[in-house]
Image (cartoon, rainbow, N blue to C red):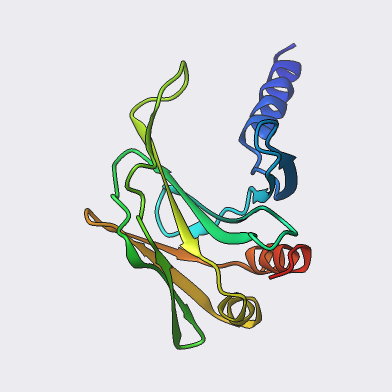
Length: 175
């Protein structure tokens, strides 16, 4: 009985703690008929215990009004207050590559509440897309980076899995 209980608890922890999967999604706004393409689950490898993901969003996909953004999501116990401007910075094999955000996380901050959520916040920042910069990140051998906030910086490492996810993102869109 004890052994069965341990196996059951291990299974629940394995399922509950498994990493989110990278997915590609499309939706159509029922009111505006705007076609939106987006990815989710591309979590970067942080140097600390915060969650950080970098995905892509394409508004008005396959139309002349198409707009492409990198969407950064940060979640942890404290606000970073992600800055506007060049606040997403990569070092790709010694070359510095910066992405620009018009607003940083201003107007895109939430306090997470719920039964199992204690004192965490989430911030989102949208960055202007640049295919050539993304291609350099994909091809890099050693890729690290940081997100600059007014309270602190968020360092991370880009893994080969992230690079494959970025490659999949680029293959799925036209710009």
